[in-house]
Length: 263
Image 1 (tube, one colour):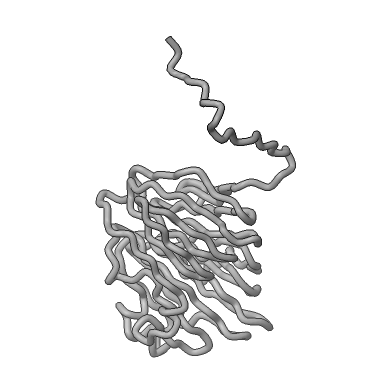
Image 2 (cartoon, rainbow, N blue to C red; image 1 turned 180 degrees about the vertical axis):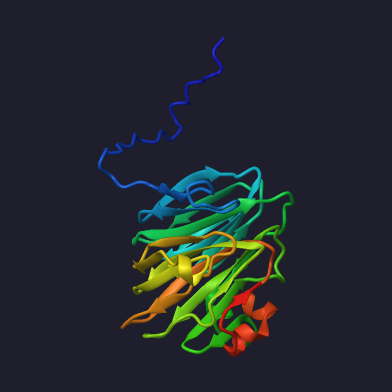
């Protein structure tokens, strides 16, 4: 006997929907995984949602995630609760948590996702840029640039720490620094500039101009200075490994008094 039943004549029957091949749909674009990025932990991709669209449910069984709201806005449902992300908001999604994305606006939306392996499931954490950018405890002011600690060590996670850096025109990273226990990615989200990544000045072979949407992976023990040009430059930085920000661990970085710093 069939388990399907014919609805009664009095019920409301929904019409069919035609989805054309050329219609835009929700997409996830993988940008890199650890191997091609010369990394041990980090993966990165981006979600694009056309106006008035929603995604299927996603779940990463063994990886924690950070979503960075780059363009537009969206609602992210995690464990049955909605989180409304405005521009530059971030959202921590724990390992094993199902999440779904929804764009309720007419304009398209784009979010960056960074993930790392995790053994523990921590609470969801929504970091609102409008609040964080007005909280001096979350801002590190350096010469020619501001750093915003969006997902800091006070938030629970296994490996991830992240934020934004905003460069003024014609500014540079100083002093150059590298990490013995952190790998990193820079995701450039506004403006254009240049970036170097090198083990030592004698091996400085990675020198590239960077534009909006470009990403640069930073494996362990590589120095990674950035230079802005005639316009402001903004980028996401996301760390996987030991959980700290270089300027909070080494005060010489904040003072700019060292030629180079290793953490």
